[in-house]
Structures are given as C-alpha cells and as structure tokens.
Image (cartoon, rainbow, N blue to C red; front, side, top):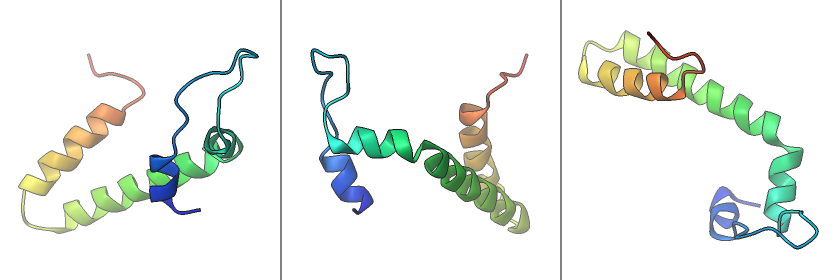
Amino acid sequence: MSIMTFVVNMPVGITPTGKFKGENMEWLQLHWFDVLTAASFIVSGASVITKLTPNTMDDKIVGKILSFLALIPKR
C-alpha cells in the first residue's frame, strides 16, 4: 500500500463499538513504531544535511520543524 493510498483512504470516524473505521487505522496501530522511526530518521538526516551546507535559511527551517516536534518545550 502506498502512502498516497493511505492518506486518501483515511478513516473518518469511530464505529458504535468504539473501534476506528477502516483498515488504514489498523495498519497505523500495528506499525506506529515503524512510522515514528522513519520520521525520526528523516528529521535526523535533514538536520545533518542542513548543518553541512553553508546556507543558514535551511538551518532556520529545520530548527522550526525540530522545535515543533520537541517533546520537552523550551522555557
């Protein structure tokens, strides 16, 4: 299943039994760790690449993404 198929066919509600509708949510429940791992590899790779480039604009963009994804907010 491609990611585009997953996004287009997202479930839109909860059934009366309390379970999420659709096979896509079941897939996400089974593979949530894989999704988080892939996202962390992508963000880590992007931050390494931006530190290697002389341009500072990409550093600011990745910095904003990292601050958005931070689990512990800055004081």
